[in-house]
Length: 128
Image (cartoon, rainbow, N blue to C red; front, side, top):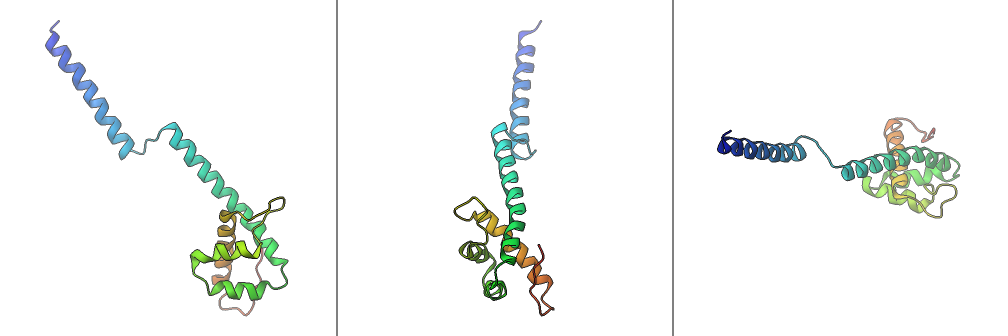
């Protein structure tokens, strides 16, 4: 057995493994367990906020001044609408003391979609 050939083969294999890992983690979409868990938590939190956004819309539909408040919201920039809904307390879920900004953003998204859909109509009736 030739030690130089074996040494060259082992070093080549190790170098190939390092290159493969670098390519895989940077451009191949590989992630560590910690990164995958963080991504899963983020996706779950966004999904929950989307579902709670529908409850926010339902709470807004019970507001007698909803039309006036939606007219005010239409004049705001897209990034301000979630904060505006937080101030209106529509995004405070039962059992919570304050609004979650993700829920408020999801609620604003619901209203923005409904408002843009009903632009040609006289009514701003929002169906949950």
